[in-house]
Image 1 (spheres, one colour):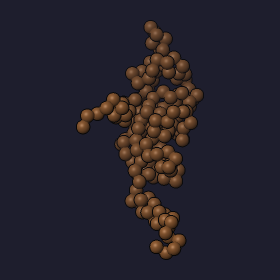
Image 2 (cartoon, rainbow, N blue to C red):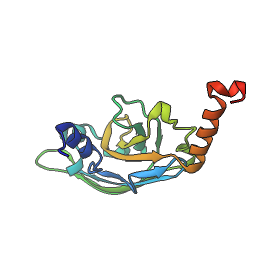
Image 3 (cartoon, rainbow, N blue to C red):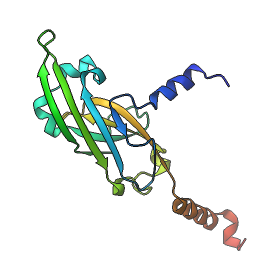
Image 4 (cartoon, rainbow, N blue to C red):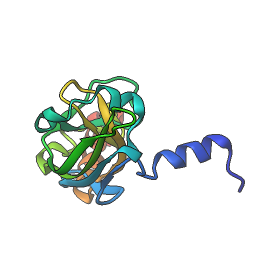
Length: 169
């Protein structure tokens, strides 16, 4: 099978080479989602570097979005742990960043009740954002899979709500 340009583009979006990496690309609903990231210039666009105020790094967050979402309305945000240092490039005047960080989206935030597939699908992106909500790094993509318990509950609900169920069939 030959890949189309769209297939190649879509596959490249799932490579998690944007500086933030979930520990896996697939989790179950209700799992905690650990991720690490590298805040280094090689992962950050010049436009973003020009506006960053590194003195506010303690206010930066990691935010969860629906996969390939086209707006800035995150589902949830959490504070990461960030260590490292920064300086100023004498030639460009831009910050030089050398930070690493980690974050964990808690299991209570990834349940099927909190992230219903009918609303969000099952693919999600993580971004590191500054104190103004500007996306610095990302996306870090992962997918949520239904557990056997969720699948069983969906089958029971489908049977109860089946049109013939009200006549005892």
